[in-house]
Image (cartoon, rainbow, N blue to C red; front, side, top):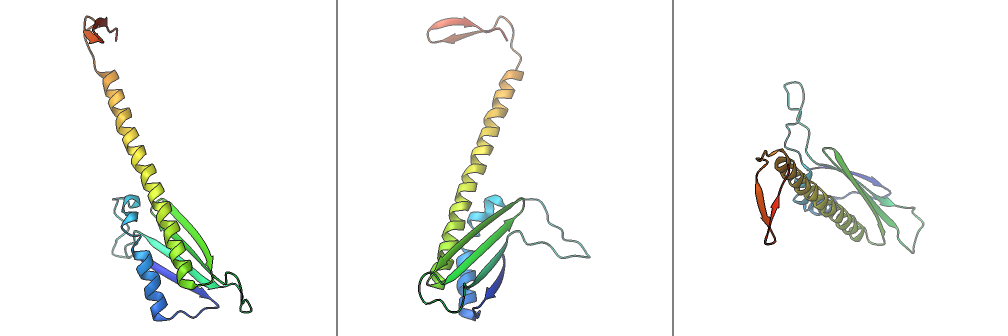
Length: 153
């Protein structure tokens, strides 16, 4: 996963960069459902595109705050044909990063359930179409609840 970090009124030190990368890399296992299996542009003239990209923006609202939520974090993750976004404010920068990660994780799980239900609905629909297309003899009889029933298909 490619992570781009932008800061405003905050210095980005290596420990903070590692913390952000560790938190967002844990989301990569949830994002596998959103990754298509199509090949990305990998040609002689260009480099291949990363499958998942994340833009993180961290900062302070202003330098004179002493109370209330001072730090804010905004993260946008782009997948093939999908984009997720989350924001958080907190007095502690690491707590705000964790809140953003939790929100993105919730959104990924919700979208994963949506995709899985769509695929199961498509298979049920295909089975129904197959049953309708199945040709039976007009004299075919089916037993249903102990009585004989003729089907006129």
